[in-house]
Structures are given as structure tokens and as C-alpha cells.
Image 1 (cartoon, protein in one colour):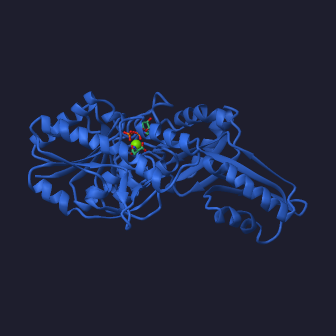
Image 2 (cartoon, protein in one colour):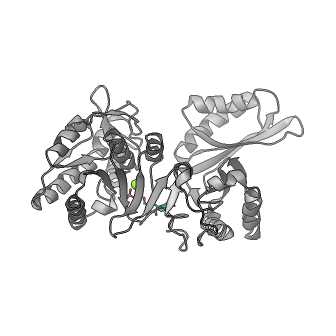
Image 3 (tube, helix red, strand yellow):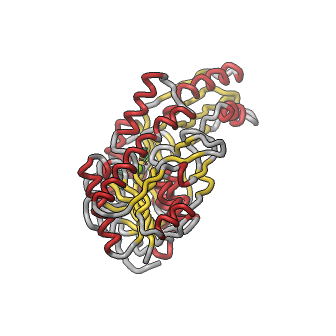
Length: 412
Ligand code: ADP
Ligand code: ASP
Ligand code: MG
């Protein structure tokens, strides 16, 4: 009898009806001989609703009390699903993250899982029960409730699957798999049968929110077979796999985008050693993460320096940069929140030249101006004006013919 860990996202448990359908699916899988652990998210919109409530009390709410509040969303759905299972004659037991000892660090609102004590879950499974665990939450050493960052239920599921050495971790959601890009933006996006951990990790970290980054990291590290599939249809979905298991020979696996960054520029800084540190040091000291960085070659002994940060950190970063500019005697600082980053991702890029020029040519043909570029072994990212986000994504999707099955189906 194999063990499956199933995770159902917010839309999949968004109403009593949908919770009933989840229960029916669990029953079917039990009928096929699997033992089942289910991880659920809060009902769709609930985490946002709680966040809004918190902000009405305190606009900058964060930290411990916010976690106490946000974790309640998932406590509702574990109880409802367990009731639905019991109503169908299926023994079930619900647990909050803390109750199954999902131990995390104490970084509230984006805690990392350190360990899971799977003994209690195993006991229930041996007793023939379905175990229903609240996603997105844990408890720290001191016993305080923590949450794992938006989308964190994915990570709870993968971590449980790793701790229990489950046969598979299935992420049931409102799309039927991982697509070449967000199907909400490109209607002709194609579902991938498989994608490598490496590619999925890039896609997730570059903005595709279908899986939380840490869930992919965990699955890769502990070799958890991971699948994304629809909670409304019967379909095998997309398997996240190692490179050897990859059948498709595409150079580019997919396109990710991120609308959540902002750009800052400091102009006319004296061009001398230590300048990058002089600018980014204070930014790091303010706990602001920097993503892309561009320094222009100086002409008249001064230079311009541009970088991007998360949009939530924009105002804080502008304050720091203004201070730095005064200290360094820079000419001016400017900022722009209306930017978007678009990235093409694929392990095939490693062995092929010309991806970048194809990308730039396609964007040029649509007169989309590129503001910043960054590359790594398996991705190329550009920053463009936010207005061109959708056009840019569709243009690149077409330029790399991602709507079509890649030619040459032989395994690499
Ligand atoms: P859940 O609530 O089930 O966790 P999410 O909203 O977090 O669901 O993730 C699913 C959504 O991710 C889809 O509705 C889709 O719009 C979006 N998405 C972004 N990029 C992709 C992609 N490459 N493939 C599939 N879905 C994607
Ligand atoms: N409910 C949380 C969120 O909306 C966690 C999750 O759904 O994965 O981010
Ligand atoms: Mg999600």
C-alpha cells in the first residue's frame, strides 16, 4: 500500500461543495489502496481577507501576531475536510502545524521548516485514518505559531512527503499542470508533461506562483516525486522530475514573469573602487533584498547604478538610497515601480547559443524597450515597462514556439 500526500489549494477548498469533492477524491484513492495524508490551504480569499483585517488595525502589521491570525484560515479547512470525510464513513483526524510538530525557525511570516516529527501521523495512518494537516504553518522552538510565506502550503505538503517518504506528493490546484507560461496571460500556453526540478525552481523564483519555491527546493533535495494536477479533472498533470527523466527536447521550457519588483537608480556617483559596496551595503543593512544590478561604465569619472528590489521594499529602499546619495555626493536618485521582469527558462540553453539574440529580436520587433538584462546558465531575464508585460510574454511565447510540442522526442 503506497502513501500519498495530497495538497489542495484555496480554490479547491473554496466552498462546502468543493470540500465535499476533495473528500470524494480522497475516498477514491483510499479505495485504490493508498493511504493518504491531506494538506489543505485556507479557503480562497481567506488569507487575503485576514491580511486586510490586520492592516485595518495596524497598516504595517507583521510578525508574531500576524501569524497567529493568518494561521486560522487553514484551521477552518482541516476541520471541515475531516468532518466531510467522517460524514462519508472515513476515519479522519485533523492537525494544525504545531500539533504535528512542524518545527520552524522564528522568522515570522516567512519561516523555514527545520524538522517534522512524523510519529503521530504514522500512528494515525497505521490506525487506518486519513490525516489532514493545516498547510502554511508551523511552530518555533518557543511554541509560537509561525507561517511559511504566501503559497506555503505547497511546502508543508512536500516536507511531509519527505518526512514520511511518501510515494508521491500531489499538488491539486485550479490548473491541470505546469504550463509553458501562466495560461491566464497566454491562451495558447501548453501543459508540460514533465519539467525538471531545476527549471521549475527557476520558474518559481522568477515569478510563476504555481508552486512555492521552497516546495520545489525541498522536493529536489529529498527526491520527492512531485506532481501538479487539477482538483477538478482526472488527469496526470505535470511531473517535476530530474533531467534524466526529461523527454522533451525544448531549449526553452517556459516563460516566467514578475510584476512585484521596483527599480532604483542613483546617478552621477563618483566612479571609484568600493562604490557598489557603498550603495548596496546600506541596502543590505536595511534587510532589503536586491535582485538585478546594472552599473554603467563611467565616462566623466562618475557612473550610474541601477538595481531592483521587491516592490514592498521600494519606499524603504528609496529612503536609504537618498541618504547614500547625499553621503557619496551623487547627482540624483530616481525610482520606478511600474516595471516587470520577464524570463525565459530552460536547461537546453546550456548547450545552445542564440537564445538571447532570439529573445531580444522578438522584443525589438514589438518595440518593447529592454531596461535591464540578467542571465544565468538556464535563464535570461529582462526588465521592461510594466505596460508591456502581457505583450512581452506572448511575444516570447510565440518566438520560441512554446505552443508546439518540441521536435525530437528522444530522451537526452
Ligand atoms: P493554489 O491556490 O491551488 O495554491 P495558486 O493560485 O497558488 O493555486 O497557483 C495556481 C495558479 O498559478 C494558476 O491559476 C495560474 O494562473 C498560475 N500560474 C502561473 N504560472 C503558471 C504556469 N507556468 N503554469 C501553470 N499555472 C501557472
Ligand atoms: N493560505 C496561504 C496563502 O494564501 C497558503 C497557501 O495557500 O499555500 O498564501
Ligand atoms: Mg499556491
